[in-house]
Amino acid sequence: MSEQTTILHSIPVDELTGAISVPIYQTSTYVQDAPGVNKGYDYARSNNPTRKALEDLIAKLENGTNGYAFASGLAAIDAVIKLLQAGDEIVAVDDIYGGAFRLFTHVYEKFGITVTYVDTTDAENVLNAITPKTKLIWIESPTNPTLKISDIEAIGKIAKASNVLLCVDNTFASPAAQKPINYGADIVVHSATKYLAGHSDLIAGLVVTATPELGEKIKFIQNASGAILAPFDSWLVIRGIETLSLRIKQHSENAQAIAEFLTTQPLIKNVYYPGLPTHKNHAIAAEQLKYFGGVVTFDLKIDDKQLATDIVSNTKLFKLAESLGGVKSLLCLPCEMTHKSIPVEKRYAAGVTDSLIRLSVGIEDVEDLIADLQQAIELATKNHNAKQQVFTA
Ligand SMILES: *Cc1c(COP(=O)(O)O)cnc(C)c1O
Image 1: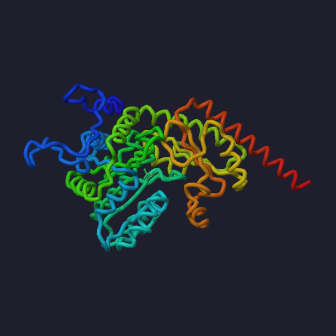
Image 2 (image 1 turned 120 degrees about the vertical axis):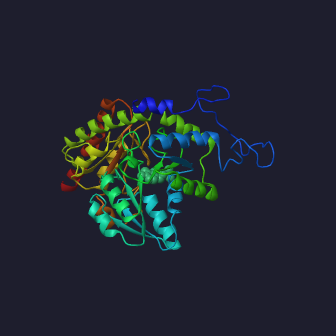
Image 3 (image 1 turned 90 degrees about the vertical axis):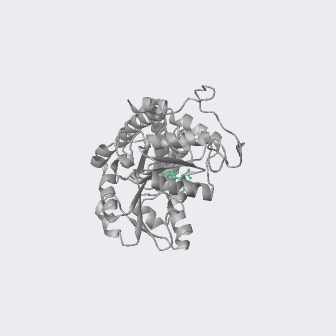
């Protein structure tokens, strides 16, 4: 069965009423027949049928055994780190999501967990960074915002051989494009805020494990720490996932066309999109990803923040906002927004220049999106040239 058919028919019909949409169980507790005798549900932090439907769905989509839903992507990441203890080490991708960096460095280092950041696009770097204390390898692929791709299968083999867990943050790809457990990952996490929910209308996180044993450990942490996803938000994520394959296909087709358009623009220096043959990791991307995704990043030949600001301020369809993965197109200037807290040298080393613009390409008709970018680029160029003439006059 195709992915889209599987998704739609993995969502159970309600046994009590036949409701085709999963009922929202808005309850905190469940009435028991006798003390300790219940219908499998006792308290809603521990278990909720709506949340359970989402958890089973994401486990199936990611080809894992167990799934768990959290109040945010960061709460999901937090639950995975809680598998570790003081003295343990993490080897993580250097291009890591800023919020994960903040959590690892400013919360968990305090508790005696240390992190080594390496360029995981070369699996050798991961192998070289592993010490006897390493318990977890943490990668994202594609990364944010320059969409670097790591070879999950190669890193999975290193993890197995070293008896270290491999966790993949699969937010940018989504399971419609990439299933890390198939390549040897032990754990997959998602910010479901992005493509899974898909409509820029909630914050949610998910964890999927490759084995029931790991699943039980995450379940324990989910219940013990309590950062669960609410029933209504669980329902919205399920509703989003119903159209995941369709959306990812459209996001990716649009993004590919836009990336190709951007490469023809004289003002633009680099276009980062794994679907372009010029992308550094295109070969592994083509092997590993079914779709190249909806994020496209580019920078300008004139590395000028004002010029880039002019572009992002003059689009009409692409709305200026952080986040990504929704049906409506967004764009942002990472140096002033998502990556503002990173020191300038470190930011430039990661390719995040002052003129770098990140697009989250939506599912609008692509001709409209290209026309929108074209007029914003032309307008900004005109303003820039006019200013240059004032200076030289
Ligand atoms: C947004 C994001 C997160 C954090 O998710 P929240 O839902 O915002 O807590 C983690 N990883 C990646 C790759 C993200 O893009």
